[in-house]
Amino acid sequence: MTTAQATIQAVVFDWDGTLMDSKAALLASYHEATTKVLGEPFPVEPADIEQIVQLRALESFTIIARGDQEVYDRVAEAFHDAYRRNAQTTQPFPGTMEMLRALKDAGVKIGIATSKARARMDLEGVRTGINDLVDFSVTGDDVQDAKPAPEAVARAIAGLGVEPGRTLYVGDGPNDVIAGKGASAITVGVSFGFHPAEMREEHPDHVVDTPGEIVALARP
Image (cartoon, rainbow, N blue to C red; front, side, top):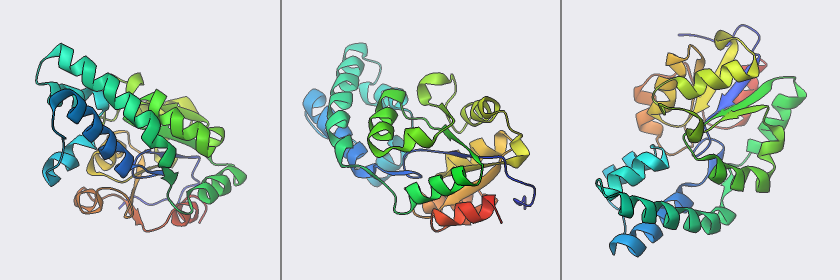
């Protein structure tokens, strides 16, 4: 197992399910958009929910639209309008802001590698103050291949100017672990996110139960 024994230069985070407790807002927005455009909510089955919340929105919209560009455009517009409202209720997981400030105080760089669209990430990042603590971010808009491809994580590490082997990549799902490993980062799974069982199946280097434990990994 890879460990965090070497001095950690940076911690890169996934967004939804890792920093932000946003699942209810995401699902509500998908349900509002699909009901408006298609006449019924989607996703509702557990397997569909599990799939959709791990994907970039553009990939989710493609699945929902089934090849119909007009439907795709209408769902995308309705989803963003709904999320702009629903994002006002999202909050960072308890202890997240304290964790991020502790990392900054310790001189650890902070990055983001998320599949979320930048406009929707910024709705939450600006309101909560997370954006003020982030040194470099890569969103789903910035990459050709979303997670589980390593592109977003690798680009975040490069943007921070740090070494992959001295970087923690923190996420809540299996795609995060796969992407982090592909980028040669030290992978950390959070058990309080959206996909704890599936995350563990990919065997991250570390699993934490609280945000505060991430500080301990970065500065043992």
